[in-house]
Length: 357
Image 1: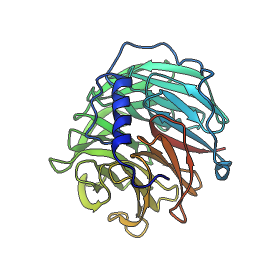
Image 2: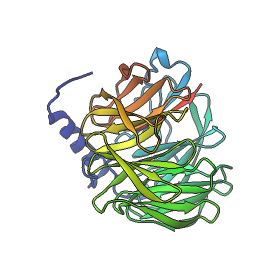
Image 3: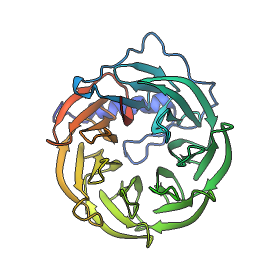
Image 4: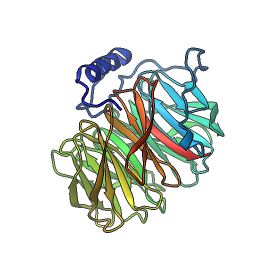
């Protein structure tokens, strides 16, 4: 990794991002720059010959690793394919049956859906949603996909039988991260400019409440405990991780992590949280097994660039982190908390997703 780099290179990459997307409102240097809406595009393009397949590190041979790129618009399947999906790709998600990859096309206000065959993407669908879509989650039966529209202050509901938007749910301002409860009954949305977590009843497809946060809070990343009792949201303003009681619908504790914390991943066994801290250039690792109501930082891993997206392999062995302004993806060993591999060659990797091969 490159240590102690001057801020000239990151600032240059942010300038590149601004030029590439056109008048981009950068969200407080949160590591998540969101492109202004442009005219709609057709279905995803074929991969150009100039977009090489990026390598999959040898220790990840048992997994498929996907990465979105906010500047190039590519979706990288490491070791398998580079798909020129859109003008700007942002969030990644997986269908409940594991057969489809969801991708938000933030510049053209679309949700892209690809069929997964091994580590390769095929048969794309493109559905127009709201303004600046960023993240998504599916209902347990896969019938509906709920997409957060950052500038639309809404969640679009996509029916996968017709590939159309059947409902638009209004939310507090700037909805960003989204998760579903383990029982599938509720969907939770971190509303960045609303200082709240919106609660959507999955069956009714309507907001049924909110969990308020301090007035200056900027909830950004979001995750949930394995039993659905607790929610965890990163405050991109204060550098704290808030723990929320989903049953009583209130914030109960906060834990200091790093500067400009972004997305959050949870280990499959429910014991550990990983928070990507953009401005601290590191990854906070928190124990939630001892007391899920009071997460405790047990390690901090230094990273390059401006960490943003984070995912964990299905067996919990590795953590995959998108370092946005460095253009790298870092592979962190979950046992040693050390970076064991780095994949280069991307322009602005934003989100990651790790699946079993």
